[in-house]
View (tube, rainbow, N blue to C red):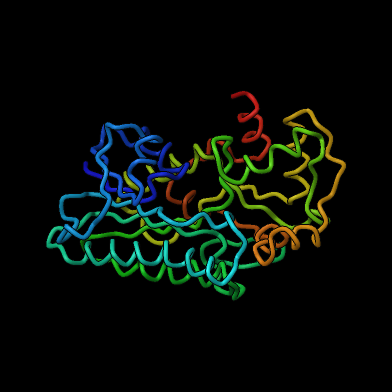
Length: 298
C-alpha cells in the first residue's frame, strides 16, 4: 500500500508513520530539511505537487497540513495564514485526486471540533447541526467542504474533527505542563467549560482503523468518549504530577495574552465519538485519568 501524507513536521504525522509501516509512505512538506530532522532520511519527501498530473500511484492520502492554530495571536493576517495553509493544500490534493483515472481509495482529511464553535454542556455527536458561527467554525466548515469534493464511487473521504491531543511529545499539553509542575496550575475561569480530548495513541490507531475498514466514510469526531470539564482536567493533571490545583486563571488575563484566540479555551464543547465507536473502534484511553497516568509513567 502506498500512502501520501501532508503535514510532515507535525506531532501526529511523526508518530503516525511507524504505525503505518510496512506501507510505502511519502510525505509532502514545504520544509524538507525540518521534516528530515524529525522523520529521518529514509522517508520519501515531496516538496511540491506541481509536477504530478494525478495521485493514481497512491492508495491513501492523509491530509493533516496546516499552520498551528494557537502559535500566534489571531490578527487578520494570521487568520488568513491559518486558512490558506489548510484550504490551499486541500484544494490541490482534491484536484489531483479528481484528475486521475484510478484515484486513491481513501482521503483522510483533518478538521477540528472547532467546527461546532462554542457550546454549553450539550452532548455533541457527528449529527449536531447548529454550530456557533465564529472563526473556528468558518475555518473548519470550508476545510471540510473542500475535502468532500474528492468523494466518488472510487474514493471515500473521512473527515477527522479532532479534539485536544494528549501527548507530552508536543501540542497543547506540553504548553500546560510547566505551571502545573510548578504547582501554579489550575482551571480557566470557573472551569465549567468542557474539554474534548483524545490520547495520541487513540488518534493514531483511529486513523489506522479508518484505513483498514472500507465501510468507514464521512465525518468522525476524534475525541475520547468521556469529555471532562476544564476543572476536572486540571485536577487530574495536577494529581498526575503530584501537585496542588488551587489557582485559577482569570479569563481577562487570557484575553490580554491571547486575544480572540482565548475563546478556544474559555468556551468549550462536549463532543463524543459516536461514529468511530459504532464502526468498531475501541478506545485504549477512554478516561482522562488513564491518559494522564500513562503520560506520567513514560
